[in-house]
Length: 125
Image 1 (cartoon, rainbow, N blue to C red):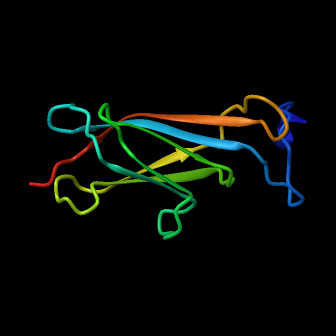
Image 2 (image 1 turned 135 degrees about the vertical axis):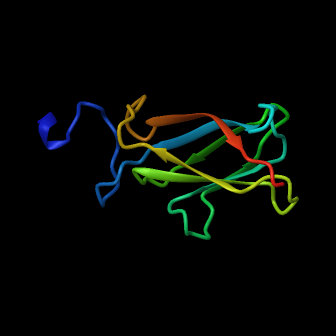
């Protein structure tokens, strides 16, 4: 069955066959010039890069860390990073690709986490 794309992971599905789980994306934002963590960068999780609707949004903490989550399944989610008009950094979009990650748990308690690692934002000149 694996060659059909099925696996032994138990994930609850809605009536449309879409997995019901928690999808998490996390990362650390640093300045491209000196690798210093950047606090206050607005991280927005979206289903598509051109979408205006936000799934989740947070600001990075003092260590540049953000944690986002969604109950909305897409094989790819997009994290848009912005300094919200402060004019210090160029906006950046990072893809959180969930197509090849393993789920933890089972049923509606299933979750999957994508660590986007260190994301370097380019300062505006």
